[in-house]
Length: 494
Image (cartoon, rainbow, N blue to C red; front, side, top):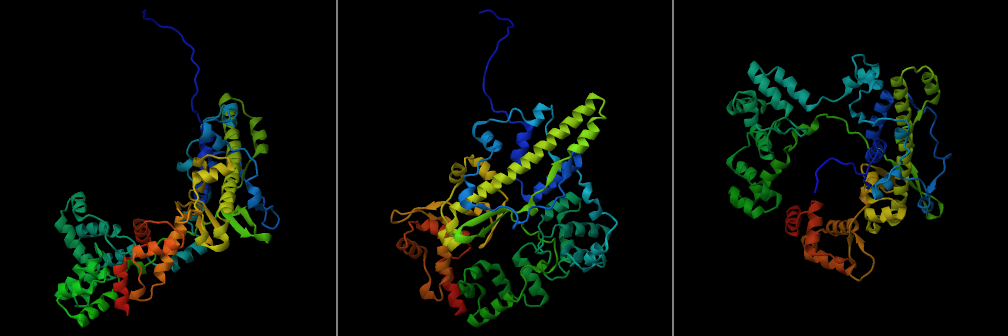
């Protein structure tokens, strides 16, 4: 066998996804807030993109999508094609025009919002800052300024305050802080002792026991019996009163008084202070009941970014391009802008198609409630609409649907199946959990408390074939105590 260089031609197949198609796949799984930030960055970097200032089509003027007709709506699905067989549009605008990959725009600066956080504040912003609640960190720093600590102690105290969560608990390792600041753990503990005297009482505690003990110490009620009760909070949580009386060495009356004192304390001292405002969730899809029992599925146009390609501006500047670099830049901008507009339209159509199929599958839930939630998985929806499972998974991530029964994430409607005891239609795991909660909520006295085995028998009589360990798993997931603890709670409240 001779060794030497030679030329060979080989033909093969491989999965190649263009940068533009990668962008389309990325857009599918973004939430509406993340999508808005992405589009803002693209508007900043691409001069050929501009906002569509036209008013969106109102609900009464626009066409409504019926659940029975949505599945029949045929449309191109480049993302699904790429997921299923690795294909892509070989004539994508980026390749035809020599465009480069559209990079991640997450690092772009959104100068369009520069006025909102700058030094020049509007009157509304100034009034809002004056009227907003003081945060816990600001309250603690105000007390630190008048605590009379040395510079070294103030430095350690600042680090400790910055490690306090919204509930008022210290989430930091003292030894690690001492090693990082070069002052030793003993010095950090001495500073923490001073901070424990700050208001609200119990702040900067490292656990619930320390938080409650600080409040009892301020009231001069931290006697040995109460300290023993704090050491046995697990027994109190289980309502094991006999074990508590034995551990604390008290009788029934004293134990009741001690528990009443604990109930008067605040386990989360920082909760009374203001924090970052919670941003409400905006639904991506609306579902409304129409005449004849049909459900109308509509996109929320307020969450859809509306952009278009400025062809007039492109025609004007392309005529003045002289160098190859200028022409290549304009070609890239035009290709990326066109692809982004098509990707946003494709994303909206895909969300509507998936949501319509989910509504068709779960119409029983919309009409009658959670007990009629059907078992559903990604493959069922994907097969019904001719897409790949991964596409459906991306579409249902961080997307919300507003229904007459409330606001739900699209993934809420995908539940596992539990077999029927009589061989009939399987039951949704979510509906079974709802039945378990109903049975437990109906317990009014000790005699009515159902054990896990009893719940299994009741569900089997209702046609649900479920194991006892599954009932226990569902009950623990809903944070419902065991039957023994529930009997103790009912006995204590009697």
